[in-house]
Length: 354
Image 1 (tube, rainbow, N blue to C red):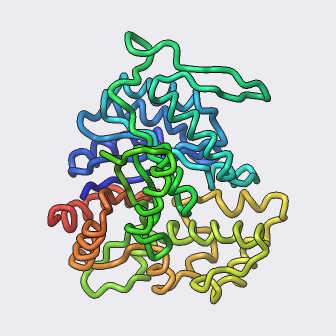
Image 2 (cartoon, rainbow, N blue to C red):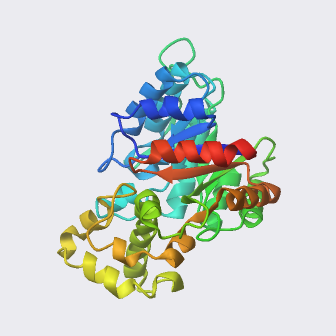
């Protein structure tokens, strides 16, 4: 099992990458959300210069905010700084687009984007439509200077639903997904990847998978909603609530069962903000802090419904189960100041035993 960390892009905390490398983490993934955090590629370039072993990449880069040639140029530049240590995680963009009051990219558009992106990463010529005109494109200058497409830059496709998972098998070298309690079982996710690969006539030799999780490491006898835990993962818990707030409104559906007991109270908090500016309120503290009134909504059941929770012994057992199901990498997301200590605790109490 490999272990990674997903951090909010912060140009002031490049030292965290050295910290993670020293602790034995395999990777650090950096969020791409232009209205909230530092530019992910600027952060990754600095991190590439300060590390020697750590694998680096956006987690995940967003289709709707950069065209495919721009993402490939950024990654090929990083590949010159840290040859063979970079990967491109790509997704449709929930927070990055929601902070602008827009919806994430549709699956059909995602498929077309991945078709072009994957071909450019391979150094191929591919037809690309831009502002209504379709022309063949390729990365023209790479290899001797400026950019490098070799060693190969792995493409991890973010897929949280069956159709997106199939796209990972069709176009990607890896899958980023969510496991239960809020995601899909590992074997089921890998089966969807296999469907996409078969459709494209691809073999999955060397294909990688990585689960993005919220992780709460409990001390013996500690409650899942202790003050310490809420400081560490409270913002992660609420990020799940923000996501479903948008989904419920747009689909005119009911909230999922695990949110029904707090739904009216949460909506009352959010809807104090005028509707035209509500997308500011729902996402502005993404993974970093809680708004007033939100801590009172979080109890142990909500933490367990949105996080991988347990003592060190319990997490070791659960991670071994996940590995047996086929999971290859576990990446935990964090945006709080306590992430330095969280990374230490997980490395010393859990990773060291696996």
